Every structure is written in structure tokens, then in C-alpha cells.
Length: 423
Image 1 (spheres, rainbow, N blue to C red):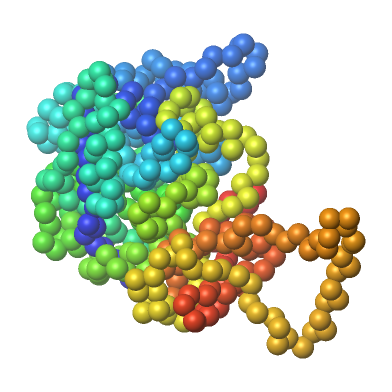
Image 2 (image 1 turned 90 degrees about the vertical axis):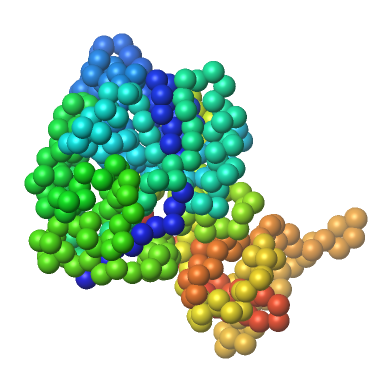
């Protein structure tokens, strides 16, 4: 059964002649078509296909966004009207926030949307409301002389649809291939209109109020995000009757969406307490389709690309399942004070390991040097699920840990999600 919900997200609008260049300097995904030209004999067939982007994308026009997947063996770059996931970093390469960046409007079937397209680049950033004020201030600080207008978009509403059935995943995969894998802006706009008219997803009465649409591919085919310029009392009424009959559209609370993310191991930066600091690869940016490796300079880019090229990401946020619901136990607890260790094996029946021989030293007895630092760090808790920053190799070897808070101990199991790419 499919489910739909209105999300309590905040929307920030960035528009103006320099909007694409401005956002390109802040986001981890690419909004400028520049391809570095090498010697002709060194350019691969895939790279050669993308040289034409410089001619087809006019940054002063309302052209859309670029979709690319660093794990795509074909190295495709698509120009589309669907939103993309991205992150914003600080100058030290640490995550400020994450967002979905939507080109506005999604389609141009109405006179109003046609006028919006004519006015030039226009984007909506969907973010957690917790970070709205700080992110709005940050964008305005970076504005400098850029010809952009940055404002809160209080008149935009966000909805989310998903269905955990193979049939829906197949449908969504086919929709992307048919409508959202275009190579240039005019084709992207035409394909978006065809999607509205023929895909059988949106109800015709509401389609003309859909200003943004994105496929949530943080996990492949995880869901569809919809932005409207009017509130919808019954979100399921957004959808075409034939679609609802086929996949269902039960209206649920946002709590269902959050729980589903935790169960599937999809971390969002807003899950962590405000003030927590993460590097983008610790937050699995490269695994959730939010990174371009070829875009060039942006805030935090140097450390990010250097880390990626280093080849080994030791620590990542991983999902965990507690042995019991810990919501009551963790109420009001500062997660940074929670101790994560291996389960106490003192009562195990296995023979004790002999104590290591300690060499004599002229400076006195020297203890065995153990592992420094914390074994892992708990970042968020939701019922019987949570997220842990841990060394990937530790989780691979043994996913069992123990959490100690106050006088209580609770066992937990960490795991690597099945949707993670194979290293």
C-alpha cells in the first residue's frame, strides 16, 4: 500500500540571473555545464558527449538542473526539471545542512509558469525548518554582488509519496527513463509536460499547481517529492485515480516517513542534535546521489575531493537497532555523553585470554596501549532505531555494541544497509 504525507519542510527561493552560478558555488552538486577540455586524444566517448552542454545550457535562462550519478558506469549527465539532493558545507568541509534543489517551475503548461520560465533562473531549496534561519543568513552572507534574490517561500507546500512494492519501484524506474533523462533544457521542459499529461501520476485538476517534483533517489526509487503553490487538504487528491487504484495512497503522518528512513538506514543531518559536526562522507553523501566530482570549486570542495581521492572512508553513519525501545530512557539525555562499547563478555564461557606480557622499561612499568578515542558515537535515536558514527570495518567484523546511559545498559546491532554500493 502506497502512502502520502505533507512534510513540515521550509522552502528558500533563490532566483535571478546569477542563481545557477551562485548555488553552484555552495552546493555539492553541479549547476554549471563547464567541462574541462583535455587533449582531444584523451577525451573518452562519454566525456565527448558532454562537451555540448556548454552550448545547450544558457545559465541566464531557466534551464533546469543536472543529474549525474558518480556510480553510473556510463557517466551520464542529464538536464532535467526534477529536483536533486545536495549538501552545503562550510569552509572546513563540514556539513552545514542538506537540501533538495528544485528548478521552478517543474513544467510550463500554464501561462503563469510560462512567465516564470521567461524571467530566468529560479530555484527552491527544501530544507529542515530547524535550519531555516541560519541557512537563510548564510546564503545572504555569500550573496555579495551576485544578482540573486534570496527569500523564504512560505507559499510553497511539500508532499511525499512512497510505496515499498516492487511494482512501484519498477514503475518509477520506467518513468525516469522515459521522461527525466533528457540532454538539453527544451527537451527537459517538454518531457516534464508529457509526464504531467501521460504518466498518470498527477490529477489533472492539481497538476497546474505543481511547481516542483523530484524523485528521491537517496535510496534508489525511494519515493517522489511534490511541491505545490496551494495547500492540499487531502494530499491523496493530488494523485490520479488510476494511480491510486494501482498503488494505493493512504494518508499518514510525517512520523511514518521518519520511521521508514530509520528502518532503511537513511540518515538526515537534522536527525542529529543541533551543533553536531560531520564530514560529508561520514554522512554518506557519496552514497545518496548528492555529489559531483567534476564541478570544480565550491565551499568545502578541497577537503571533500581530497578525501574522496584518498580512497578510504573509515567512519560513516550507520543504522542501528536497539534491543528495546529506548525513547523513554533517552528522554533529555545529551547523546554526546552516551558511552558505546562492545558487550560485556566477562560472563562468557570461553576461556579468558591470557594477559599480555608487559616489557620492563627503565622508566617504570608500561601498560599495553589500547585503542584511543571512542569506539563509536551515537548521533540520533528514534524508538528502537538510531544512527551511529562508527568505523565501517568494526561494523563489518561485529555489529553488536552496547549503550550505557545513566545506570542502564542496552544492547544494539549496527548494520550496513543493503542499498549501499559495493566498495
